[in-house]
Every structure is written in structure tokens, then in C-alpha cells.
Image 1 (cartoon, one colour):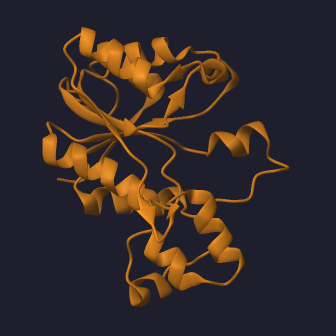
Image 2 (image 1 turned 60 degrees about the vertical axis):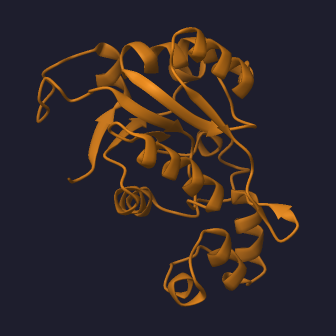
Length: 205
């Protein structure tokens, strides 16, 4: 099955007949949420959870990193392009991607409103997120609150602990630092690639 991309605005309008989509374009879905820049080992663990659990593993992510939109002068650059992310998602077994254009309007959503929309419009039936995940206006909603909200509605929610590589957590910031220092072997390892595969990636410099 090829990866299906659903725009956030299409999702929240609840339309059943957007161009090119059938009335069942958003069936019940196991979801994860994040920026997923570089698709590192921690990201891969989240995606593996929804692919194993199902149904219809769905990633909710952004067309542009919100940090790039909010503070372009301080943004350090993408690790993966959008096309690279989509390719990686599909290779890992993701079936749908809900793609958000981060905007001032979107930024005003509270975390509760965001998660509620994924429930009601996205038909979320399972969620896997990082244990340090936060979302919503001024990051008002943390992972523990999301799990509490979801489980009151009968939606199982797994909080996944940070993956440790060496003695430190895996993160996009750590990958960027490795790339800048020229340690592409470490960057590839943090993304779950062997050195040979990692050497083929077009890392930004």
C-alpha cells in the first residue's frame, strides 16, 4: 500500500469527499505525533509501536519544523527533507500521514483541543508518544495529561521513554551536533543506519 497523505485542514473539516480520497479516507487509526526530523532511534521506536499495534498506522507531523516557522533566524536546519521523511515512513510500514502546515491559527490550539480533534476527526484508537512530549498553546499539555485524557475515552496511550545511545539520550539536536563535528558515523548510528548506509545520506553541513 502506498503512503497516503492527508492535509490537516482536510482532516479537521471532516470532509468525506476531498479530491482523490474515498469516503473511508480516515478509518480508525493508531497514531504517533512529532516533528520526526532525521527519524532517529527514538522516532523509530514510536513508529514501530503503531505499526505493530495498528490499525492503519498514522503519523501526525509537520510540513515545516515549527521552530523554523517561529524562529527562522535561529533555526539550525533540517536533517531530513520532507520527501526523505515520507520515504522513511513508508519503508517502516506507515500507511497514512496527517500533514500540518504550522501557522498562527494552529499555534493557538490548546493541547486538549488538538488531541480531541485527532480523536473525533482522525478516529484515533491508539496513541504512542514520547514520555517528554508536549503540545498545544505555550506547550500547555504534557504526555501524562494526554494519556489521562485518552484513557478516560478508552483510547490506549503508550508513553515511550527516551532511547539511550552510549550514555546520552538520542535526539535531533545530538544528530545535528554530530553532523557539524563531522562524525557522520555517529549521526548514522543515532538514526538507526549502519555506517555504509549512513554514508549515503545527504547530511546538511
